[in-house]
Amino acid sequence: MLIRLARHSGYCFGVRRAIQLALDAADHQVPVCTLGELIHNPQVVQELEAKGIFVINDAAGTEQSTVVLRSHGVSREELAILEHGRNSIIDATCPYVKRTHELIKKANDEGYPVLILGDPKHPEVIGLRSYGDERTQVYEPGSELPEIRGSRLCVISQTTQKIEYLRELVSKLLDVVMELKVYNTICLATSQRQLASECLAKDSDLMIVIGGKNSSNTKMLASLCGKYCPTVHIETEAELSLDMFSGVARIGLAAGASTPESRIVAVYNKIRKINGDAVPVTGIASIPLFKEESC
Image 1 (cartoon, rainbow, N blue to C red):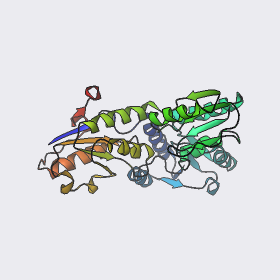
Image 2: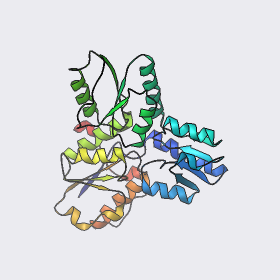
Image 3: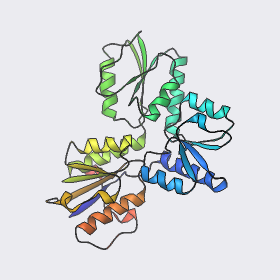
């Protein structure tokens, strides 16, 4: 049985940075709070809680505490509440998300209404929308275009969206908007993981996508891979079973941007054990990589 890992898998820069900021804060003072889950990976969130880093869901529920802003960012209103409560704020917002906040404000200052491509219920998109003016709208892929008023529009994307969705939206808008400004704010790590996973899926009999079931970018990977071969989205190796691999010769592994390397290694070792190889590997460097150049 051939098992290969998509070359771009696991923690991205923004997630790695957020976790390190939270751990550094906990080294100096506990407890530490995160406003919402720091990243969308339940197992990592549990590990952080064991180290004195706890999740709060209401900005008004804390005062004079150490609060880490989640990697997806927070709304402008939530930030104001935290500042009013004289909290010590550590900003772990992904720099790519922060840049998108600034681009929305810039577009508004230049007179452009903003249309955000993304999931309106996702914390990142909720935060993005708060940095725009009252004309700011959200378009969810597959839905009807909202009413566009005026001849000018600026399009900005949630950082974990598919580039194809952005292209499709822009194509639709060209028929209804005279002046269109587009910022491609899909982060490089997202694009790399999508391309690597998609190419591996085309050359696999089964894809195992590893990451939080609540992770937008991981769910996107599973959706992409599912177009080319049977795909299973798991959070941990405990979800694997022998029957999954019946008649399978080529297994592909992919992992979202909030999945730690240790989890990828654990899944790889479990698959090997299920298939009769009891010798585990100790690090991700020992897992064969699929080079998407061959795609």
